[in-house]
Image (cartoon, rainbow, N blue to C red; front, side, top):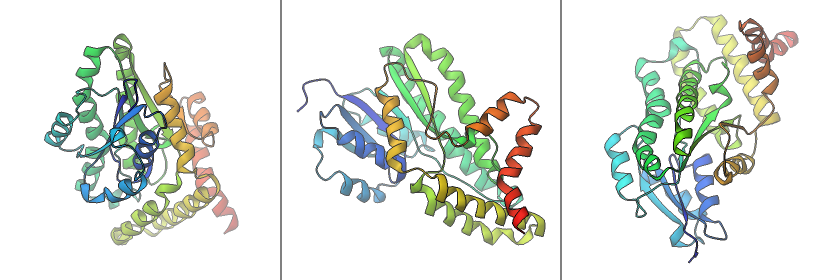
Length: 295
């Protein structure tokens, strides 16, 4: 057993992708420096995580049920933390949504916000008082390039992530007083999500019936663009996990960490031309222009 006191880490959304990978990476630490509480909405999905950590010490990992959209579930998970504290909170639970805006039902839009925004708020609300009383803590939030710049056909997803950015940036200012650091990890396309994204957009096709042909055509072009981008710039999960590890280990972490520099020129254009028109034109060209030229 490690002699040093372990850093207690709670991670949401651990059934797959980044959450699963980060739980494995921390729980497998050679020095057993971390005690990981890996949470997921549906415990039936814990098998993959268990397979990945077969050789880990039992002292480094526990799996808990936690649905970020259910406050009772968050409170119940919190009560099961033996150390009665969380040093690092990783808000990673999130869902994507692609397609023309007029396709999405109100319920679907609400669900995206329930998970991505309200779920993040509820999770932080639960653990913040403890961090404040101890005058220490790190809150690390899985965000996205889509939280900083508009992406076509991701209107609702981007809206939810823009909201998370505002939440965290505002919190960070006040939490300086309490020695609590808030960090947003700005992810681009990650290989783990690729199949999910394609399936998601295929499911959307059912609702495209009432959409005008021009929008449908643009959406097809956008999806082709996505596949090209994934082939060219999607990062391996390991590379993204390293950025999370940097934030977790940093004595004084930054507010934002970018896992890729690929979108930085568009980001800088958006920030430098404040009326926004340059960005809108550049993003349109980036997504649609090449396809138009080939046609």
